[in-house]
Length: 183
Ligand SMILES: [Zn+2]
Image 1 (tube, helix red, strand yellow):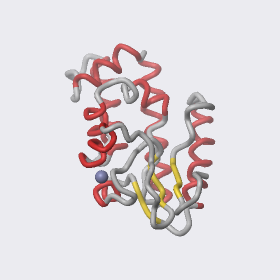
Image 2 (tube, rainbow, N blue to C red; image 1 turned 60 degrees about the vertical axis):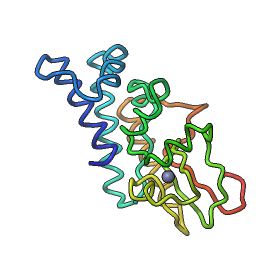
Image 3 (cartoon, rainbow, N blue to C red; image 1 turned 30 degrees about the vertical axis):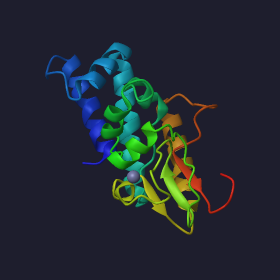
């Protein structure tokens, strides 16, 4: 199961828990955090957002998964809870989590070729193989399809009523080119 499926399952289990039909899902610290900050309406919107992300990404056939929408990420404590716990939920490899915990919070490698990353994920090396296998990184000559998917996602999520983020939030993907400034 990859990260978007795992997050979707967690959100669905949280909904069942609120309806009294299931125990508190694992990981408990994330489940407790989310329940303190979401109404049933928020949870349904989060579920619909992740379902849409999963569907459009699968339809695209692209290797790297989109970042979790910040509305969902905030409610699951992605910016607040323990980095290891959140990293594991999001399928970040241990090598990259350790790198991040050393204070390397942005991509600062010079890639050998154009690299596409899940927005916000920081790999331990320019091209980390476990990260590639976890659908967090790909080297490619043509990142255009990722920008197209990003536009489709923005439109679909806007139609769902997902809030738009203007400042801190860049998008669903990061594209890094050899020697160049970040686009
Ligand atoms: Zn790594």
